[in-house]
Image (cartoon, rainbow, N blue to C red; front, top):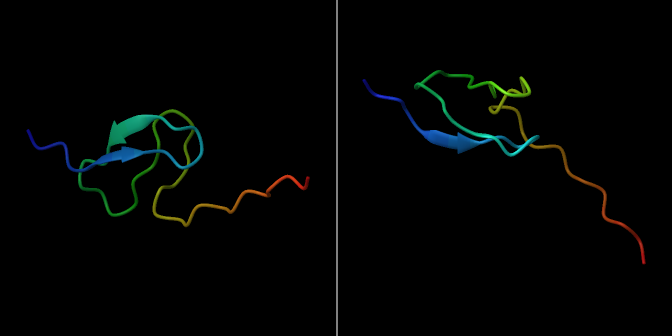
Length: 45
């Protein structure tokens, strides 16, 4: 059985396989991995 590519979730950091799906979704938090990661705000010093 082929599991596809191993991914790491942009949101929660969970590691999972995409099973070669066109729109992989994190099984832990439900975040769609094909959407671009939202930029995080940097803290001002």
